[in-house]
Amino acid sequence: MPIPTNTVVSASPSSVTAAAVLVLLMPGGLSLLAAGLSRAKNASHTIFLALFGTALALAAFWLLGSRCSGNVPDNNTLFLFRAATTAIVVCIPIGALAERWSLKHFYLSALAIAGVLWPVAALWSWNGGWLAKLGYLDPSGSGVIHLFGGAVALAGALVIGPRLGRYNKDGRPLPIPAHNVPLALTGSMLLSVGWLALNADAATTALAGAGGTIAAVTFMTLRNGKPDPTLAVTGLLAGLAASGAIAGPTFGLFTGAVAGLLACVLVPWFDRVKIDDPAGSISIHGAGGLCGVLAASFASTGHFAAQVAGMAALGGGGFAAAWVLFKALDRLTPMRVAPEVEWEGLDIGETGLMSYPEFRQ
Image 1: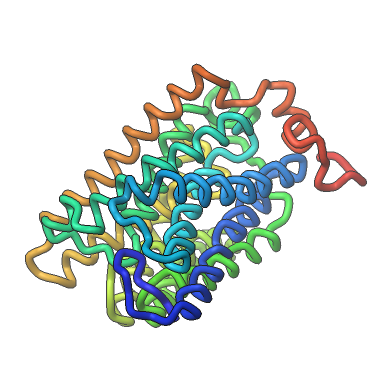
Image 2 (image 1 turned 60 degrees about the vertical axis):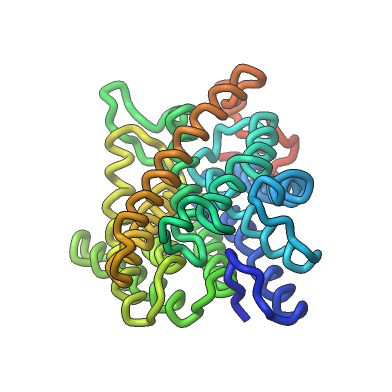
């Protein structure tokens, strides 16, 4: 049973627990997506970031984040659900910063995001915060989870810079092929299951994902003559991200289609402006969240100003806060691994364990 993330609901503990368990599939899905779309030499490192990031998110939200969000859970079951949503936000930037984010910097960033940054955004949007009082509509987090997470990912990508070898001397992007597309597709399926538990309206969520997928496949087929499975995933997930602020299956289908199309356009655009995002996290969550928040203003009259304020606060404020955080932590411990570690692979240099010991890539 999907449980709205911003309210204490009168659902049975077993229903809330089941939903929380499914939502906890999402960090795993994000890690498989990012690892599959990256190179083999960094796969273990990428998945480990999500694994340990989830643990840090749960601990930080329990110790501090729930208090900063203005809504201390009154029972352990509701805590688990809310902490699971925190883990999603912590793991979204992994896809954008994959193959170069140092473990130490990630540890500190995850604690700060889960303990302070995201709980403050949740306080603004839910729990009677100033955006909620303005009439901001975002029951399942298109803005407060996905737009905010995408903004954090964008700030991180700008601070850390592109991967070595991603651009030639003229600034043109060079392809870095994904090492395991089926792994990325599997991750997207896990994410889809988790999304159905995260959002309050499962039918709208499913159809928004369907709309995003159809739009992406149609666009790529018309453009290149063949569908691109990696961009089909991008469309699917952008559509799902858009579904958190809207209600109504038909409205969800068309909103998801717009989000999926926009995300597919943004992925190559970010490449051209030298914002390196291996998993398309900025396009998926940023574009998807933005479409969902904006679409809610058309579905409900009298909320346009509040939705625009939400986009500015969660997108712009999230970006600014994350930029300051990443820059400040970079002074304590480097955000980016050393060049020799990046060339060799973060599996060996950072975790000491190769994903595929039978070969190197």
